[in-house]
Image (cartoon, rainbow, N blue to C red; front, side):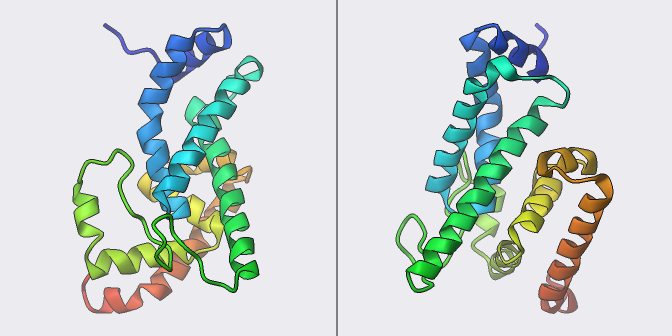
Length: 197
């Protein structure tokens, strides 16, 4: 039995097929939550944002235009929501004296779990100092650079698709990623010199 493409499923959703929407939800929920966890460093918030993304997809189903990949559209919505959440959290942090809190109440920001809850190699490695340093370096990037790096390195999205998600030209994406990777290279230089990367 052939697996339906995202486009075929979304076109059915446009015609009112809720089962196709459930298939899209099951197919993309876990990677989307993983992306959002990396963006906002808070699993609970990532789960809420993912739910909002799919709600917006469903609400906009009749206006859907298949001029880009479904995943491009999905991640554009997710990225915009994540960037808004980051901005709102930064504003709240400034108003509350600068102490940012994670969902479990500890100071600082960190990735608490992998999206689907099963222990993975990444979850085990994240406990090490090396992974903590890398994660903190990515989290320290400006929000749009962070989104571009996570989409490129963790989600495997190409430059053209990143451009569509972030509403940037190809050259602007290349420039954004160049600046992000240069910043990461500088921050991670002690690991590079020590041969730990």
